[in-house]
Length: 351
Image (cartoon, rainbow, N blue to C red; front, side, top):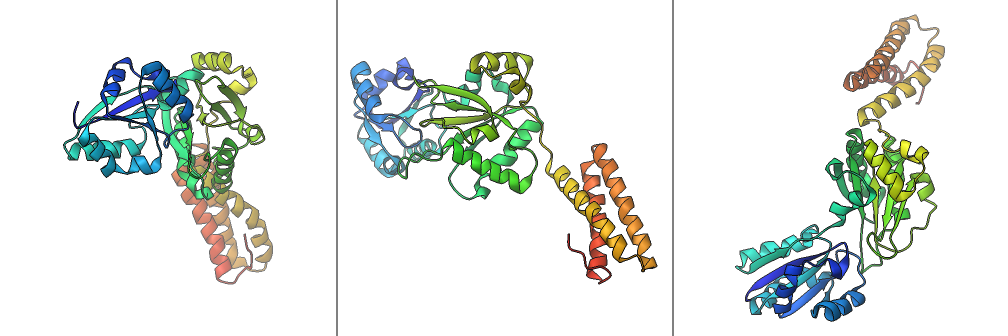
């Protein structure tokens, strides 16, 4: 075999998950790299198993090695280069970048797919894979880094779909983000947006070290999970949407979660429009009596205040009827009228 890069997924079961057909191709490669960058793996143990069980000699490939695409292509041009990847091939964009450059350079690309946490996490919990609605990654950083995940999960929950949240793996800077830090980020996002996506009562599943000897699965409320120690990496957070009755039975059997907890799974969050409308209505309703008191001696202000009250009543009715956009518009009119009275100097009220 000449001028080829062979991508081989190891699956979620490690060395034992390597496709049988890929073994012969890897044995023919002059060099085999074991990806230790994109997924947590016990590299020393894996390399030993590869040699002892399959007769394959592999070397660790960190971030620098995998992002040195010219170097990889040079090795492939000199003879077949194998790349072993925990999980499935091309789930991480790092590997797809290598594939594209190899194809542009005329280097043959061979691919052996395998299982991935993306395809197997829901099944492990007894959740239906066709209900997967969102996949996101939580990384270390300010609260804003979790906003994409926050809104992605919100959309999935409103469609009764499940979400898979992967946690950053950073072998160079440490182990990466842990469950507690990930949940703190999501809680901070909840404090900013207050849509009920990641409140303390949100029921999540934390799947730790899936398919390993130390596998652990917990179905737990987010508030309780913040105080838990889930052990070593890797971890996956699953946010289930509303359960089909077969899912509820399966996840209960697999995780041992009580019925009370299962019945709370998948609570639908508010839409952003609903949250903004509620906030505007609450704020304006609270300020209105203060304006009435200060403007008691200004009869010309009464029609304005009556309009504020009417707009608020309309907003509340529209929200009850599910017309969120109209509710938000009416609440905005009410808020704007009060603000105009303040700006014109009729009443000095901050709210």
